[in-house]
Structure formats: C-alpha cells, structure tokens
Image (cartoon, rainbow, N blue to C red):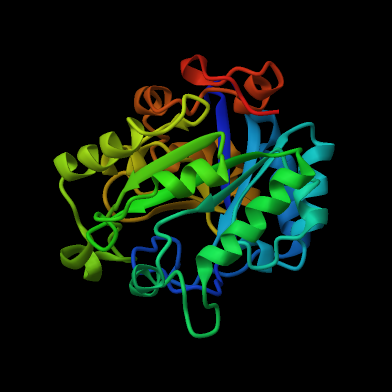
Length: 297
C-alpha cells in the first residue's frame, strides 16, 4: 500500500442497468462492460478493503443487483463504512439498516421538469413522491446519514429546492454542475451545459436560505471529473479526468495499486478541497459536520 495514498471512498458501479433515463447520466456505460459476478465482487471488495474507509455502491441502479444485500454485509465484515447512491428503485428498510450513508437525487419537485430530466418516466412516474417515501423510511430507521445530490443543468437551473431541502432534512446537500463525459452524454451537452457563474449563482441562491444543519458541498464540473475513484461493472478502475473514460485492467488481474497507476490516480488536492476526506459518519457520531453544523441525531 506504500505507493498508493488512502482513498477514503471507492465508488463501485455495481450494476449498469437502471430503471430511469436521466438526460444527464454519465453512468450508463454504453460500452456495455461485462457484469462482474457475485463471487468476483466479493473478491474485489477484499482486494480494495486495505486502501479505503468507505465503499459506495452506485450504478446504474445498485439496488437492482440481486446480490446488493450480501455485498453490503461483506463490506461491513471488512470493517468498512457502507454507502449507496440510489433512486430508491428497490430500497427497502432491510437494506437501509445495513447502510451508514444513503445518497439520493433531488433535481426538481415538479413533474414537468422531472419528466424533461428523465427522472419521472411512464413506468416510474412521480419521482418526487417516491423520493419523499424513501427519505421518510431513512429517517425512521435512523442509522444512515442522508445526502441529497442535485445535478444542475439547463433543464433545472430555474428550480427552487429550498422548501424541499428543509422538509427532507439531509445532513449534506451536494449540488453538482452538469459534467460532460465523452462517450456517455456529450450529445446532450448543448442542451444541458451551464456556465460556472450560473452554477455558483444557483448554489448561492439556495445556500443563503438553508439552515446551518445542512452541509452545502457544491462541486463544479472539473471537480466532478477528477476527484472520484471508480470501479466499473466489470471490476476495472476508471477515470473521467481527461473528459472521457480511461479504464485499467481488471483489479483482480493486476491489483488495486497497478490499476490505480494505469488510470492516473485522482486529484487529491481537489478531493480534499471538496471535503472528500472528511469522515462524515464519525462526524455525525460526534454530532458535528463540516462548518460546525450540528448533525441531526
């Protein structure tokens, strides 16, 4: 481990399939990588465990993976924190009880905007109502931290999320500037892209009206591209720092350190600047989040 710094969070794209069709998505994996098996994921988790503090399952939609519960158990058995980024498709109370952090997406509250974004679909209507039900379940269980992400694009730049954020009471709100990833969503760039000034204004407009109990942690597009350590559905590391996807050899073939070197690592300085190094689970136990905000218990 000497040549690889601690990676506080590794984002594992557990499943490439999704029940939604988000316009801005950069986790669709159009290259259609091979899907790692249950046995491979168990081995991958063991291989990366010495290098990290938290595993975040994402996708696609990770709750659609039939082994997600068992894999969360494996993460816990390795002494790591458990996290998931989900649209709530198959999020159950039993899964929530296994999690230290749950991330969900709040891009809008009105159906016309949600339909334009692909968050509400004919087969998955009324996304916001579903989000509210999931959040109520998360708060009822009480174990995990709730984080809400907002991808800010041309389609939702106009929305006001203050009332929703106050109602849903996340510990952390992460606004993300729409980011172009070549091979994923560049065909939507003209319709979705916003300037840094527009993004900053969106964040400022909300920040000034939110309570101190919500940690506001915005990420502009260069930060989104360069500060995440990610595993694709086949078990390869990948990076988007250069604008497209750069893949390593499979982790099970070369180990994490070589895979890490093959994709060029990540931008540690930006990672720390965005608060990626902060142990939010431990901070919650101490009832303190970054910025001195009290964490809801």
